[in-house]
Image (cartoon, rainbow, N blue to C red; front, side, top):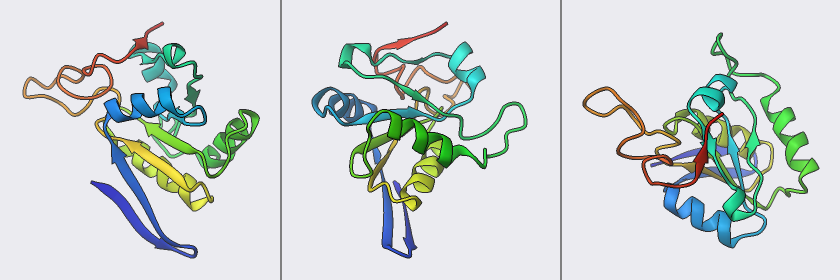
Length: 152
């Protein structure tokens, strides 16, 4: 699964990448970054990826505001400023993460439209979809894969 759309510069394709492959890329590529686009409430109460073992810093920029749930019209500008401050170039690999992969796909598409060439969506996100018991985080996603994470 991925996003593909034609733009003025040609086709924009956002690939879905498994959490395991994302973790491998973050550890092996010194320029690869992870952007968590969930809300502040999710970061606080659900947790965030811990990139310290990979020697990386997590970028936290909300795609949607909480509690309104509307896309932040300043998202791209905020993220571009954060990426520029971290010396992330438009040709560096950027992984986008949300709860289960929907918001992060939209955020990756927005940044690809701004000229970032290697935007990737983290498939299944931090917690994955609901399981048959209507719980998240137990079968797929960052947490379920046993990747490092922390909670405040």
